[in-house]
Length: 75
Image (tube, rainbow, N blue to C red):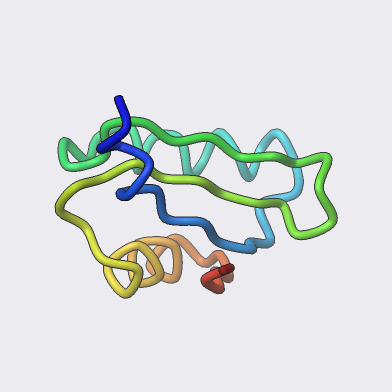
């Protein structure tokens, strides 16, 4: 379990509405390299957390951009 904490990527996004979430859910659920993901739409940054041992920040950003969402890494 501790290992997964090293593989959590955190982003600020513009995934604000339930419809936005539905759109990106289809994409993220289809990517086998993503073990787990969630989005905090209550947060001002609409924080997206992704657990993946393989995907890089850049790859996640590209995936979101392809779906017309903004995505910026958070520390």
